[in-house]
Image (cartoon, rainbow over all chains, first blue to last red; front, side, top):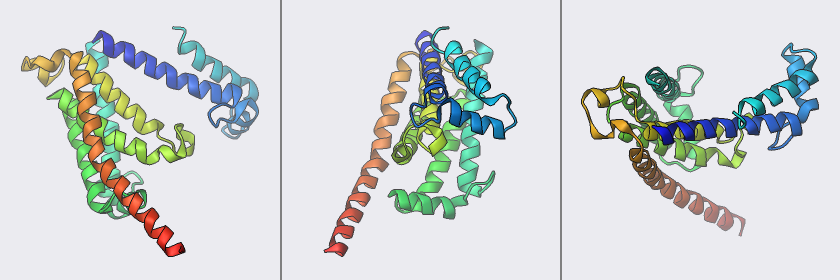
Length: 66
Length: 174
């Protein structure tokens, strides 16, 4: 039980961190803040750059530091 | 804890069932056995239609075991094995999902491995029948190894098909 829950948390945090760095830094084939913000804008999230950065930061804050 | 593990099991099983019905029946925008079989053939899984049905049935069987919490390590091994094959097949597109990489099968397989380690929790048939693997832990490692070994069978056959195709391509060029 203990091992499994630790594993689940680390796996989830790792994947979220990857998606955050795609948005924030453009790593792992991500588009970075500018490219992600264009997608966000199209989906109706404005101001998109700020929201893309916030989303990425929420990914990282909710992830590994918890 | 009890609720969370039940929820995790049902979510995983539900998503697997959806993917199985895409392959087996063409539901939810899926391509059905013929269309999925064509993709499988392209990936080197031959005969494609039959292996697409096998993959769909494995997803249903593994998902049913996980949802019921019955023979959980065996069900997890089936899911891990199926998702390992899917992850290898999609890995040429990289890891991340936005380019069709192997993130999704990796995640499903990883959750199955997690459920092997946690055990299915008290609200499960394994626990109701007092079966020894209901507590998880070491059984997660058993499920992981069994799943990876099972995946080696179709992956080895696929490697042989891809090698034969490469050789045929070289002969055609020469």
